Structures are given as C-alpha cells and as structure tokens.
Length: 151
Image (cartoon, rainbow, N blue to C red; front, top):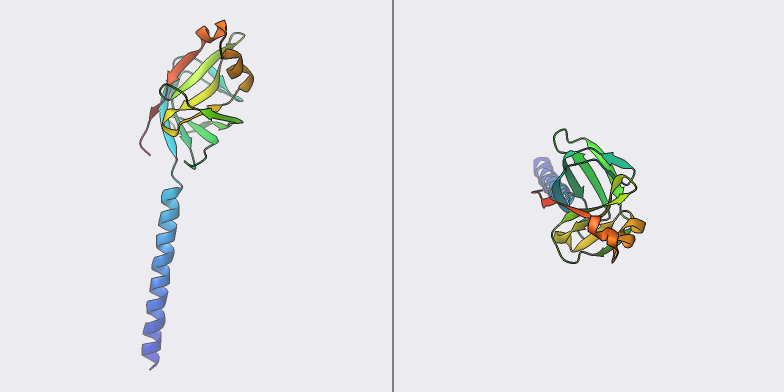
C-alpha cells in the first residue's frame, strides 16, 4: 500500500516538474528580442547620451508587441555601448530599416530609428527629427541601413 502511494506521489511530482519546465522554456523563448538588427557606422555619432565610434553594432529590442527600449552592443565584443528609451513612436513610413542621422553643429546625431519590420519609427531626438521635416536641412540627413539579424 505504501509503495503504491509513493509511486502515485512520485508520478504527480514528475508531471508537475514537467509542466514547470515547459512553462520556463516557453518564457525563455518569449524573452528573445522582438527585433535584432546590425548596422555599420562610418563615422562617430551621438545617440542619446552615448557617443558611438565608427564600427559595427547590433541593436536589440524586446517585447515585439510594443518595443520602446533598445540595447546597442559592439558587434565584436558584444559589450553594451548604449541603452536607449524612445519617447515617441511614429508609423515607419516608406523605406527600409535605418538609423536617421542629422547634424547639430559639427556633431552627427541619430534622431530616429526606423524599424520597417515592426512598422514603427522610434524618435530619440524629437526636436531634431521635427526640424528635418520639409526643410533644407533634410538634404543633409543621412540614413544608415539596419539589416535584420537572426534572433
């Protein structure tokens, strides 16, 4: 009788453990980046509070349903070089995914990140982004392509 009860309890514990493992694996899969892209900067730019040197970078965004934060890593070392929060989201409009760069004085500044795959443009410098629209300065704006990377 005791061995039958022990076997029954062991079976239930095994099933509970399997269910817990399934939930944890599903949670880990959902925690992967909603968007991950690669880009190369040919020159130094300021993006938020960070200054990025010329080179290769990876940008990752969590929560594909409503991303608003991004992490930028050096592509070689995978060291985090910038953590960004975007105050404004707009429709992506036309074009491929890209960093939109303008000038403030002599400094180049990323003012928006267009994620075409998500259908959204994330504005990091609203004053610079809105000055660009319909003005002569828009000719000086540059787009650095962001290629979607495999998660």
